[in-house]
Image (cartoon, rainbow, N blue to C red; front, side, top):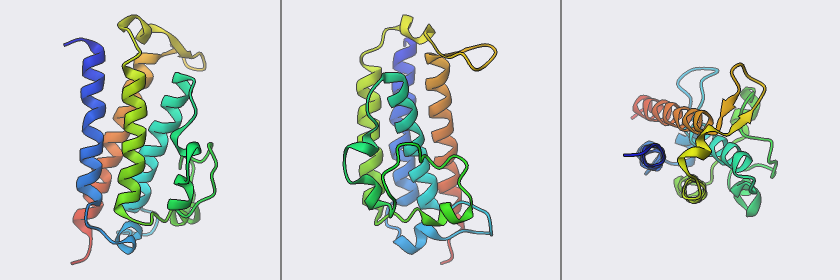
Length: 168
């Protein structure tokens, strides 16, 4: 299996992990937090999709999926391509209000499709292209793609954990 196939396999696991965390939950359950300052399931899944969307669009040189439709409104937000959840304070976290599990899953499916299209355009040599000189060593496309999927899997796991804590 080559590196691109490994990346495609890793990214293909994210939607299923997210679906397990959100399927069948109410909007109130998306907003429930186990403790003050914790992130709710709805925010975690929205954030993992937003992070993937924004970062893959940046390295692909394409428009974010979030900016191409009514996605922001489906989460109770204004469309802002810079709003991925990074640095959100508690009020901003509470402001992410998914209308349904399907809204989260639809957005993630659209992001996943865009990611898979981009991966399909790459050669293994492309993975060595430097995409961020702001680090030492500079970040290559391969490293960035691994970082994105790693972040997604962590947030999906956090969402699954919070789901397990939901009151009966």
